[in-house]
Length: 230
Image (cartoon, rainbow, N blue to C red; front, side, top):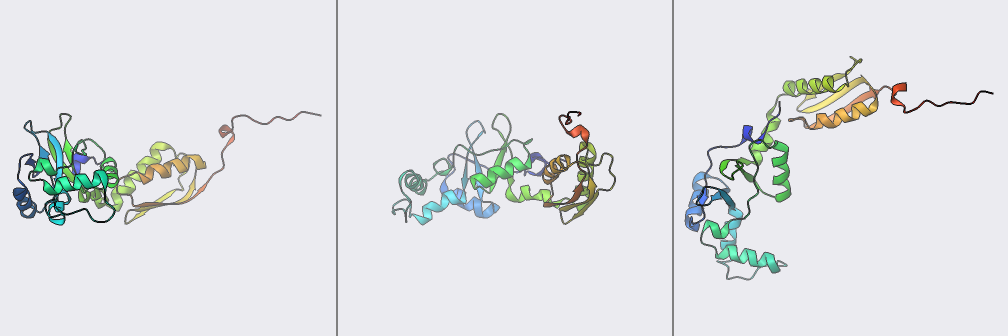
C-alpha cells in the first residue's frame, strides 16, 4: 500500500495572517505547542512560514540592535537583523514557502525536509490554499507498518516483476522492518533491480540480499559465438 502526504498530514492547522503581531505569535507557539505557522494572505493562500527559529533572532540580537556574532556577514547578516526587528508574521516569515501537495509521496516530503532543514511543510492544493501540514513525525509514521504488511508487499513485488518466475526457493523474512531474502533466484540483473524496488517499499528499514543467482541463459546473450570449421 502506497502512503501519500494526504494519508498522514494534519488537517486541523493553526495558521496566522501576515499582520499577526509578534506577541500573539509567541503566545500561540506556547499555547498550541507547535514550532511553526503557515502564513496566509487576504485570499487565504499560503505565502510563507514563520517558525520559532525566525522569532528567536529578536531575543538573540536584542531587536536587531546587536552586531551579528562570529563569521556571519553580508546578505545573511542583513536578513537576520531584519527578522530581529520584525513585529509581524509578514516581517518574520520565510518566503516563498516550501510546500507539498496532498498526492505527493512521503519520500518527496522527507527529501524536502532534509534538504531544506525544516521540521514541517504546509500542504496546499493547486491554488495554494492550505490543505494541511506534515511534520517529520508524520513522515516517519510509515515505519509503523507491521512486518506482515511489509512482507506481503515484498512478495507481491517479486511475483509481479519476475524474481520468483520459475523459482520457488526464494524465502522472504521480515524482522523489525529489515527484509532478508535467501535461496536461489533468477539471473542477477533481475534480482538487483528487485532489491532496489524493495528498498523503496514504505516501512522497509533495510534489505539484506542473501540470494544465490542463477547464471544467465542463452537468451541473455546478444549473439552466439561461431568458430570456423577446419
